[in-house]
Length: 66
Image (cartoon, rainbow, N blue to C red; front, side, top):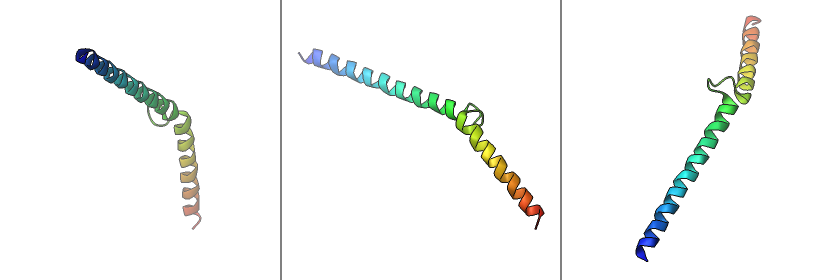
């Protein structure tokens, strides 16, 4: 009886590790999709880069007129 309970706990522990690994893999996949592998080519990364480039251009233009 005790041995079967120990085996059951080991199986549950193994299943939990696999579930956590799948969650981590999903988070990484979402991060790569959102930001790309270089931080700029993903859906969010390119939008952020464009906004920062636009802001930098505006700041450079304002400094020249002062």
